[in-house]
Image (cartoon, rainbow over all chains, first blue to last red; front, side):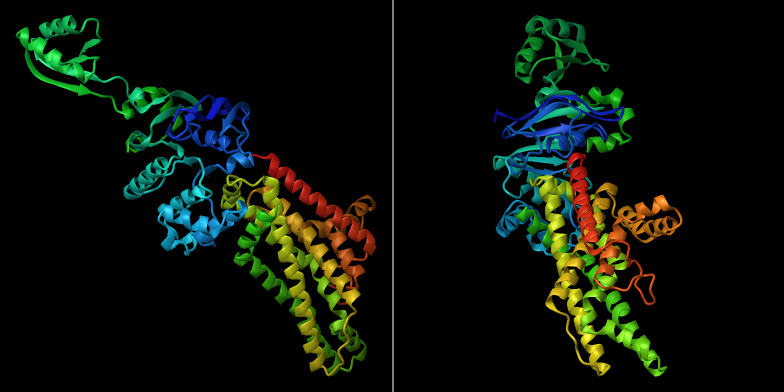
Length: 312
Length: 279
């Protein structure tokens, strides 16, 4: 679980004077689902394109599965869906996969297995151009699965899918990860990342703002205490917990930076001191809140995507 | 490379465009090579113009198949091949299939090699089908006209087939290069056709007036293709009944040499651009 299999060091891509990816250093560890999170035009896709050798970095370096990005021996162990599915519209889904399979000397059995994994076997004979967006995305994932890769790089795999399709795709990603694969997926959908990813890298304006687990990113949990009188409650909590970050909220509550395991102790002390306890509950920041805290100055300039969409 | 060839053969052989282009070429070839000539022959016979009738009959005879087959290739056949090859490579950018292929593991050079070899296989089919269709049409015409069938020698047939393959291979390489450089199927087809059907002819027209320009037009791809057709016995465009694009500027050997230079140069340039550029 801990061995790094994707490591970038100051990875940078410039187009003319425009820096699209700016000194990104990230690490993806074996067996994890890594969410590469950022608003539209943040540099996610360009970073992923560099990781599969489609684009050469202007500066910096990357190692993927201990090899150079784009090297055939590396790519055979990587399955990628970058910038949406690109297939021959006149061929069936099955024939499209057969073309790709032939490039890698894979068999028709491999093709059928990949179709089966994304539940497309029944429609595999239909022309790609007749597929719905969801089916096209699933075929893209099937292509990425050809050859049983160790690492899956999926660029916005739920893009354009309806809620049911998004749920199916999340389930598929979880299933693939459960099979022991490492998944690096980019997304601008916070809910999606929060639901399925073990670790997250947040990128905005081409810069990696942070990289951590979802839990770390959301921060340590705190407790909200409503008690009367507030001043006395404040004193009791401070004397009980010692040096602790304690703030009054706008509506007269107390936000205490401690875990919910300290709740019984706090309640006992407050009751013992004659303070009336009205409410005590854990408070956790959502990934959405964290994300907007990090990206709000940049986000407005970088994307027009409505906040509602980001939060989906 | 073999794996890439097998992959590209699968997708190109199932591509309707491939067979539409071959079908259009066969139709044009039979129409202009046999149907209109046969109708002209009947007119010449009914109007008592025996000299013209004999000349047309000699073109329609199976012995004339090798020269008839290559007569349409420098211009119209070549234009169709440019379309096919430009679409084969250019549409990979429109559909983003190059990107999909490149993320599957083959080296870019191998993927391009597969495309070029698959095109070569399909162009061999194109040339053989043309030969067979022309032999069949010629036999039917001669039988209807009540003439004996005079078959071409194997050597002449091989020369015609080889010449046809070289001409279409050069145009295919040009089309593939334009498709890769333009990164767009529509633009590449447009550019290819404008160059082949308009620019070269205009340059040749101006070149006949300007000495220095003439030496340049003498080494254009179309000049090499047209000269090879002329060297193989096709009637040149300046003669009565000659096919457009067929020339007598270069010798057969010079034409073959120049076509090979263009073929290699176009493929090398396509490889250079495809491997060096971000996908």
